[in-house]
Image (cartoon, rainbow, N blue to C red; front, side, top):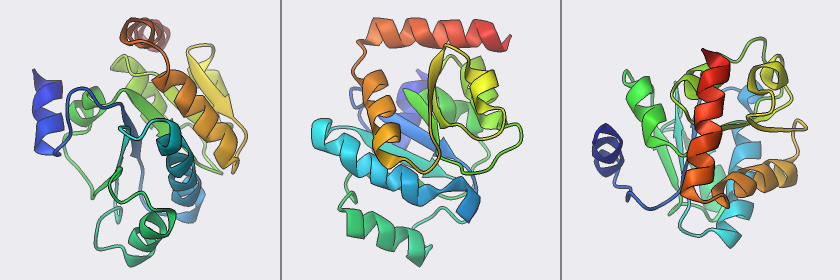
Length: 173
C-alpha cells in the first residue's frame, strides 16, 4: 500500500520498473554515469524509470537537467531534492543503484538491502562487501557495465527479484 502510494505521488505506475539512486549531487557520486546507464537501459526497457534524490538533485540543478536532456531521458528520469521519507522511497523502488567513484561505507546499500531491495553498485569503498552475492557490482565509471547490471535485475521476473531482495535483507540483518 505504501509502495503504491509513494509511486503514485511521484506520478509513476505500479508496473514500471523503478531504479532509485539516493545521494547528494557531487562529482564522486557520478550522476553522469548513472544517467548514461539509464539511457542505455531505456533502449531495452523504455518503461523503466530512474528516480534520483538527494541534496541539489532537483529540477533547479541546471547542470543535471542539461545531462538528462542531452541523453534524451527526460521522460524516464525523476529528479527529487532531499527527502525525509527515505525508507518509504526505497520501498517504492525495484532496484537501488549507486554509481559512485569514491565511497567509504555506502550506507544507502545497507538501507536498501534492509528494505529487501536488490542493489547494483560500482566497486567503490565497501560496496562489494556489503552486497556480496545478493546484487551486482560493476567497475567504476563504466556506464555500459552499470546498464547491463541494472538490466539484468530488471529482466528478472518479479518473484526472482523479490527472492533476491529477501536474501539481501537476510544478509543485512
